Image 1 (cartoon, rainbow, N blue to C red):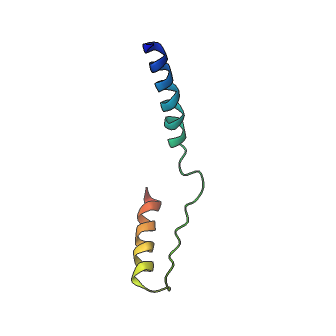
Image 2: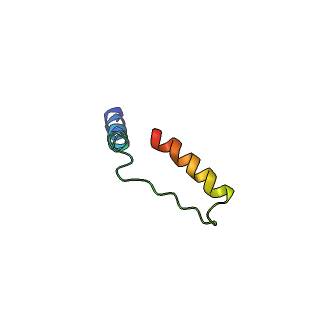
Length: 54
């Protein structure tokens, strides 16, 4: 019984660990639903600059 429990745990954890290594596979888009020049756009631009560095 313990063998099947350990085996099922390995099968559930292994695909997730592999999937995280390639994230993000594509560029991330940030959509700001407000007018340009506002504080929301400035915040989004500053945030995306920090994300690009990572």
